[in-house]
Length: 161
Image (cartoon, rainbow, N blue to C red; front, top):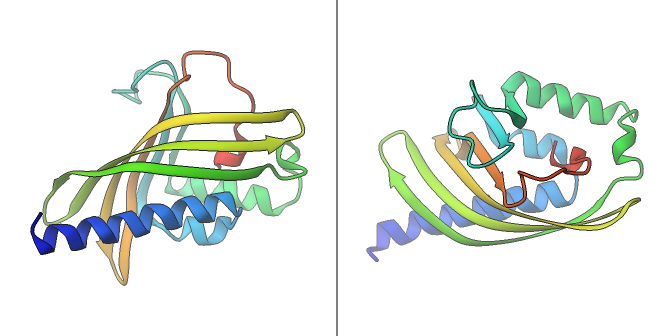
């Protein structure tokens, strides 16, 4: 792999690991700062989620909705996360799929271990990112989290924001 490609992959990998740590540690304001102003966050229901306008989603949020969810967490009245779930993610298989002057399209796999009031749950997903370089680093212009078991009944996923 050429040195410039390796450097981009290393930067992308650090970004994705940082995002996972911020989510695991419930550092929501810092996590929010990883988004572009036009960012879109999706968690499709029932499969791959190819068309969010015509298919059901668990989460389909634009940037202002992401900010609203975080403000709701700060109120202390988000009872589905009282007490907060204890979380740890394992991220792997980070791969750059495409790159142009504006965006880097990336995929990765993740396992999220959640320990909460209703017991322990393991979530598995494939995450697809569209990253854009802004200011001092990379930001998420889009993230799609495709849960392996998104075709079954799911417990509360409020920890996902």
